[in-house]
Image (cartoon, rainbow, N blue to C red; front, side, top):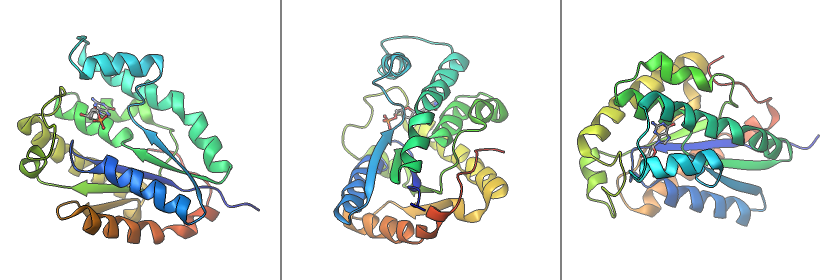
Length: 214
Ligand code: DGP
């Protein structure tokens, strides 16, 4: 039997360095002879993604609950392709997932359970690597402040919500599904931490794909 691909999610505050590490992970896996692809969330290419994009760039105003459901719908519309890739032996590296969905919307004041519920049943990542960086350090990184959520006070609240998300993942799905990675230091240092975590989950390729929040 051909092993399935791994489903790896990178999460973190804005400017925590996720996207840099996501593409490095993709390149390393391909270099080692694995098939891999990147799935960015929100996926701004789809019709729903375009609405989210104009909201994030403050070109459109939307009700908080409505935009939360759009973010979730954006994940659902990509879900079949993710599962197909995994079955085809392709490792999927997601740059954000449902966990950002809860953390950002709950930080704006929406009830935590409301935020979690539309994503029940999505494919469960084999591991979520949560890049930890202080909001003050993130704010010093390039291009901070150009989008709607890139403000230090909001990012502080997002960080608090991510702690609750981590608790929920560990309680419902096991402690190894959520791993904190120190994202302060050089790109190479952070990369070494990420790569050692990815190598540790190789055996999950033999396991079936589970469902989020079930
Ligand atoms: P990025 O393209 O990674 O810069 O992310 C876009 C922004 O959208 C970022 O500030 C985090 C936020 N975000 C991502 N997913 C969700 C979600 O599901 N719900 C909400 N409210 N915000 C999200």
